[in-house]
Image 1 (tube, rainbow, N blue to C red):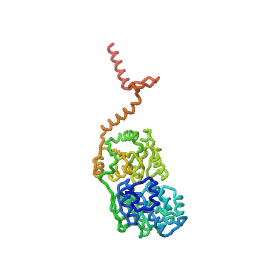
Image 2: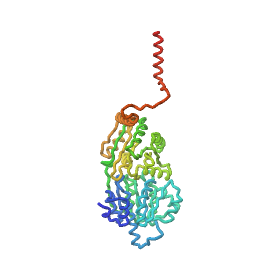
Image 3: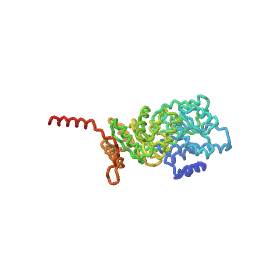
Image 4: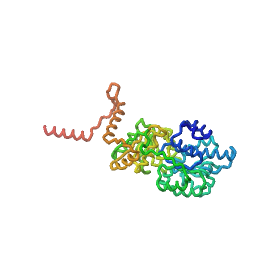
Length: 433
């Protein structure tokens, strides 16, 4: 199917072609025809399915058509926030904002993003200039509402993205406070990868006779990903990580860790291997986090060390590999982590470190994806290391097989063991005499 068959307006189709998209993803194909009619939608899909455009395009079309019906001028007008998109993390909010950019320019719609850990001066100035579409994280949104900077009484379209993630990040209370300020008559797009009871209750309170669309494949966490598990001793994880990040076959890597406190020393491990690296975690400023992400996207660094704040919503094209330095406690988290690679049908590699007594976590992952994962034992890993070592040392040999010698004026110093043997032999000689 082509985008032309999804009832999209010409300005959007023109931008889609310019951006290089030819055919919609499955989620886009199923959601867009209902969404452009203004129907409430409840949907879930695996990561990397193209869900952002699935709601961004309908939002723009609904607002564009509404403006035409009201015969509003194309020039400067006093704009009100008519579409609100709430995302759980700064990275996801910025990504949605960036996805809107090219399409807003062709539809003459204004949009901006507000999120925490950024000076709110420029965000307030952007809102005061009036916007049609606001992308926001719950905490900063509620903060600016309480300052009377933002009014949501004109919102016609509400989108909640990654609602289950908001539950895990304790944002649900902020979301409930925001929702009280939005008109009851509106179009709502509700996305959640999982449906715990709290999220189901929220969806039921917001949606009016929604179209329910589920594209969830638990039997395969993306078939284009090569998945491996290294059974390794805790003391050997550093050495294994340094070996993997130096592989030339991996052009870009995200290393996931469990705790923010682990980020610093694991980043240092990668750096000591001679590989360019940066990191992101919740305590870094938004500018610092965005700078690190852009560095990975642009190839300025090879490795990004991150907590699970980067496991959902981030779209990094051509990411070669995901390394789980710690096996995640929740099987769902594993799927979201490895979903950063092999985006849009491309191939990728996911490597997970597993130490003793973590077999239960591995079993839960295998049960969720209905797939037995390849486990590389330490014996196999050591063989792999020897092969790589021989390949690297091959450069020290000449073409005829003779080892290159390095001239040195320094005499080689005997080892402690060699000294002890020499002393023992001298004692024996004296006894014979």
